[in-house]
Length: 199
Ligand SMILES: Nc1nc2c(c(=O)[nH]1)N[C@H]1C(S)=C(S)[C@@H](COP(=O)(O)O)O[C@H]1N2
Ligand SMILES: [Mo]
Image 1 (cartoon, rainbow, N blue to C red):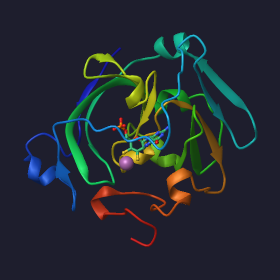
Image 2: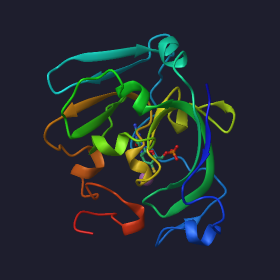
Image 3: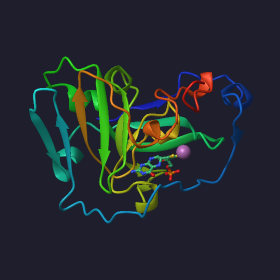
């Protein structure tokens, strides 16, 4: 199964209308990492969703690849002001992972190999808005861009798209992640220019 979809801001709108305030478009694909690129093998990679009651749902690489795959094409927006239009990914919707997960949690913290974390409302991971992606523009995702797999949450600033993702912890209360604790905005909507705490 596969699906191809353009962002709801896509079709029929000029690139100018798709550029959030304070952003500039780039054709290149900058690499932004807070630390070294961790070496993560698909032989040992797992993706774990841990509920607020401590229940763990875990997928190996092969299990993840056997799930329905989607090909989202989306604009991405980094808080350092570059935006990139129509980036094409391949991966599994968070809706698919969360289907069989019994939870009343309102928040999630994404955890990465290497220690990075980022928090977001669980609702922002549902409804066809977020994916675990393992390919970019037709090729396996390169390590510097988060390979073997990263989160893709394109409607929020790109720091929410955790590279080298290893799991989600679902929680009743909101807990700031790495950049959120360091002064970035807790939510990070590029259309409202939520760059820093207080924006
Ligand atoms: N694990 C991890 N994920 C991360 C980061 C990071 O430092 N570590 N940086 C974030 C930031 S600030 C941005 S803009 C994007 C950059 O992704 P890219 O390097 O593929 O452009 O990854 C996000 N995800
Ligand atoms: Mo960023």
